[in-house]
Length: 233
Image 1 (cartoon, one colour):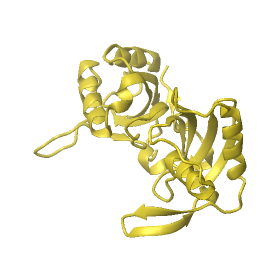
Image 2 (image 1 turned 180 degrees about the vertical axis):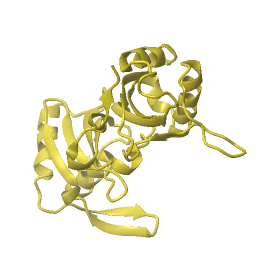
Image 3 (image 1 turned 120 degrees about the vertical axis):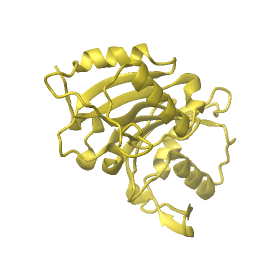
Image 4 (image 1 turned 180 degrees about the horizontal axis):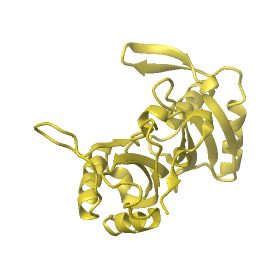
């Protein structure tokens, strides 16, 4: 049975890189006695994949992990029981939010990623006096018909128009909500948006000025990855 797990990553855990998070979850599966499937061969490993690795220093309310378990539908503990069992094995800063069964033909989370929501804020002591005015200026900048920036790729540097990959945004009193393309076809990070704004307006910031939090990850049709599964009753 395929299962999709949604979890949050907060506090000091934002400084833990993706590979260490992956190793941590492998241990959690054993501690929580999840009947996770293993690959075959001389070096079996847990069948596990993450939707979109989170950068170091970012927090999140919407991280996803797919696993396969050996339980059949009738023998599997409920979603509520599994969420409780997994959280009992967690460290502070990571919390499992849902545990949902996927259809047998479901694609893995990584291949489904199409977009992600983010909230941008200034770290304490780094923001301008009038933060609301800044976020409104940034939102106004995002109204431009074209936002070009030099992006470094595996093949070198390329001039890229990121405007088509900015799907939604709105300024708040002390933050900016933004929805960006993500996944294999286009992957626009909030830091790239800030870099474009800084480059084209001349407004500069400390490298540590912004705190970025991922709020949700979407598949095709802007459906949250969580919604492709269903709770086990």
